[in-house]
Length: 201
Length: 107
Image 1 (cartoon, rainbow over the protein chains, first blue to last red):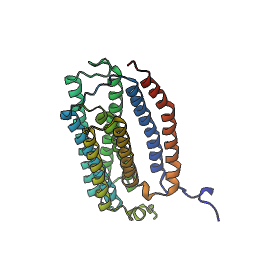
Image 2: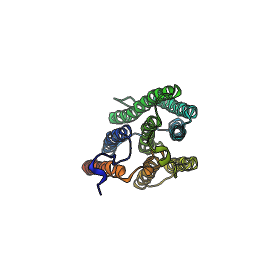
Image 3: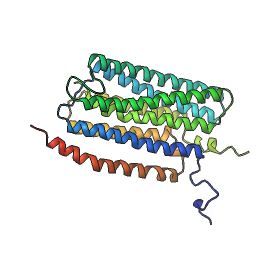
Image 4: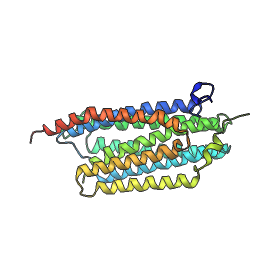
């Protein structure tokens, strides 16, 4: 009996697009873990680490943002489900709902950033507490994450447009879903470690 | 025409009810995290609880939303042990040093 690894068959039983996306996700996960560790490193090494996140608006905003991303993951999974059953119209609707939640996340996040910049005077290079690394690590982490969300919005927009016109297959929607869920997953670490750990009590 | 048997493979266990349950569980754990932030508990316990809950949340997202639970085990074994090993190696490299810096703080 030949092994599944002896060639001619797909040992993972996934298509190449999906496997490619998984490999990208693993490498991106390492990028984010390195950034989170850099953040944790300077945080531990800095005696007077600032805690600028007041309950209102920062913690309330970031909690609502978490809710937006988690809900967008649910709508995305429903979109993939609909597409797997050949319901293209429903799939487009679910993907548009996902994009709406993602857009809400970006708007809330930018509002939160502006609040931090204007009211707490935190910039990527300086702040009132003399800990410039706080702004550096904070904006690098949340900025890279927000870039991922914006790229995800563009990606999903293209997928929704094409699926609505009868192009692309279920597997393409599923691969875009994988990316979107990963963006949600990363926020599950950034929210507690960056926001909740530096909440002003 | 063989358009991949994914529709058949993925239906078992991947129901709307399962997705809604996972979504509620994720929201519930997020709520607990926010509540913990406003309880006066020691930082180390707080951090451990946060990381623990986040890992559980990540596992739920990967297993259900990203469908890994419904893929072949070989895919999981190819991707994740390596990822976890790399993260542990980074932790081993950086955390003792940041701990040393913390102990060296002027008191």
